Length: 196
Image (cartoon, rainbow, N blue to C red):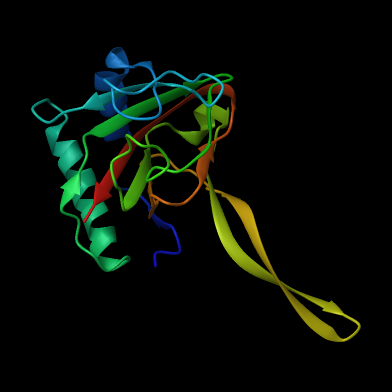
């Protein structure tokens, strides 16, 4: 069972991040949930962002290959399984008051493709936005002493990710995660999904 997330710093340089933003932003439209572009729906109370899919065959190909290689290496080295399929990359943009509430990337909707791993590659410099840091729900335990007896409690807590430009966060697609409201500025990321 997959039970943790993995952070890969410096997958892309500042220049490469800016190139992805520049070449993807112009295609971004209101984001959908519950499926793909043909079956999905707008749900602004659950997800308020702009997004677009990035296909191969553009000037971004060398950058996308770098990201894909890093994603495959994490799947193989950290999670111990090879990836057979990576869906088209999704460019996602959040401005002030935009968000994506707690959700899974796999198995939560009838039209959702079975996914094993998800990744978010941070394209924006964290100095350029406030709020909106990726959070992942993690299960754990807490030990508390009461009257000389240790009591173990299971708990689930939200872990905020210390985002850095060019870093990639990889996690099982079954993990609950969210992007809380952006308070100011603009946050851009590449989102990836894969399966065995």
